[in-house]
Length: 192
Image 1 (cartoon, rainbow, N blue to C red):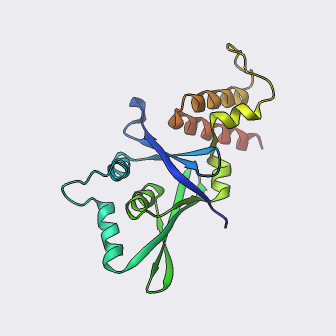
Image 2: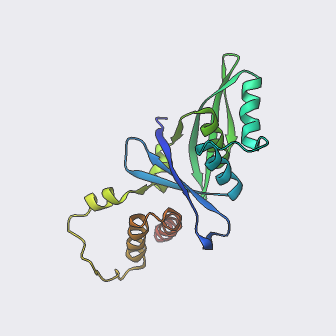
């Protein structure tokens, strides 16, 4: 599998999210974004490490990093390799005593570990194809005609959702964009 390397673009939340955050990953050599809904604890763990803030006591992901170091294992990479029924799956690839292994993990935990050990983060192409959201520049390039300022909403439900998705991306509201993307996928699967 030729996975696509991504980087952390940011973390976002909204008051209506019920404590959930969107971890936004972006292609290093591309224009797509991958929003993944994660919990507040995992978002905090990622944010603290990105900001280089050390809590007074080790967090769970610090413990996991320290355990890998204590047993002389090296985390090679993190791969978000599957999307099934709206749930992302990841693997932590590591080497221990010359043998490669992998651990199943939630993407949020895998990313929280990756930022601590400075391991690269990858996404399987089929996951990015299914759940990736093109950036505003890519959406604009895909359109053949310039967009009018006040264009009417499209008439079909699918076209309306696609317009709402474009608007959410333009406003960098990736959490809303992820929700709309999921609605579009459900609508398309129902029509097939």
